[in-house]
Image (cartoon, rainbow, N blue to C red; front, side, top):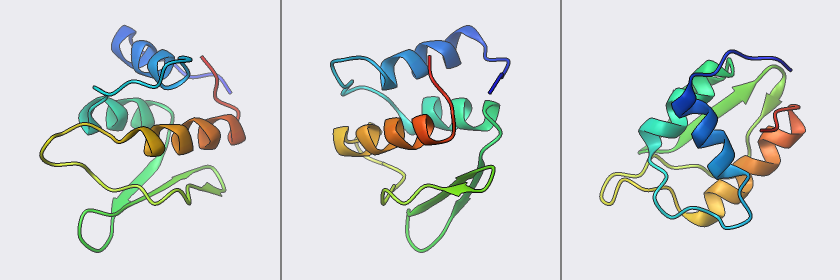
Length: 90
């Protein structure tokens, strides 16, 4: 899967796949990356996020963080597996 990512999006993708899971990844950074990858992103009840790339739906229970704005580590782990499943790697 080939995508044109800017330097910030490439940095975010690298952080998701880093051996040490980041604790400072924001929703805004992730959303930018996902949109560049062609993801269909929608909010459902509360701050729950529905995410789909191609025919693959993310089922990791993702919520848009507010305060603090950082994604929890378990969500990043789930996102990593989802990205692998749809053929995205750094």
